[in-house]
Image 1 (tube, rainbow, N blue to C red):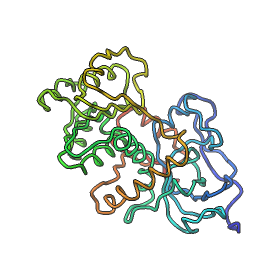
Image 2 (image 1 turned 60 degrees about the vertical axis):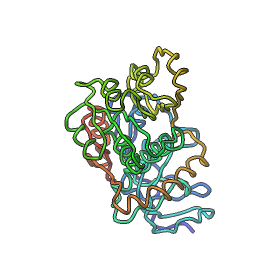
Image 3 (image 1 turned 45 degrees about the vertical axis):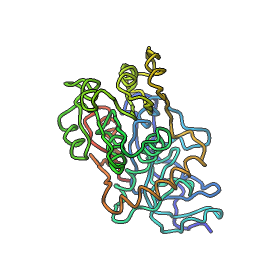
Image 4 (image 1 turned 120 degrees about the horizontal axis):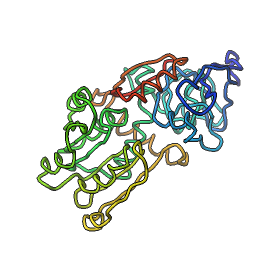
Length: 334
């Protein structure tokens, strides 16, 4: 039964033409229609992520069938649902991962990639979780299989992904965590979260980690930089190390000496989240609900929010992210 007070149209962010942050503006869109097993969410908050910037520049088109509106993570209230959606009721507060459509007053989400909001979290905090925690879980735990007693290096340790990865890795026994960043303020945050900070503008992370690990190197590396880091990651990886790339801010092309890859039996892998089959995203959602949500509810893992923008100021949020000074997440309040 349709909910009678859902409007036909809504405000959402439109990309006028691919390019700068100034190309984002608030515009009128139709409220999206729910498909099978989907929920319609009145969006209260949405996260801003690097892939949104890539999409705005024309480099990251939405997957087939996904909303062309920016935004990969939301939190809000269920206001309507498909007849086949049986996990949530109208009025439930949820957050979750969407393949697009977050920068809007209403968005649809498949019930299997929606999660209940952890208790005591507000909508802003809840919306800051999905994209980063799905990404970290899938790459650090599923792909790189971090174990108790292992060491981890995170590049971009003060980013939304970085602060999530440090906090998740802290839950492993005897894990030694290193994280790179470009300012003393960012390094202070990294240290406060329990990782060894390395200011890459002043220090050589390869030398520091070799010294700190007695020459052994690190077991797992999570890298969103790429470029010249690709070779250096190979140098600093321990025997049987796993290197996972989730982005290439400095470029995806590098000349790599593969001899140490062979001698150290390294695994080089990478992934994106957005174009993965629903079943894979659902599996990650279930793992987060089981393993990470209780830690958030116990206060062992905390959302870290840098700045909150109004929906109409999405362009300014992009500019702020591109300036690279933020620590933690940038959020939109709808």
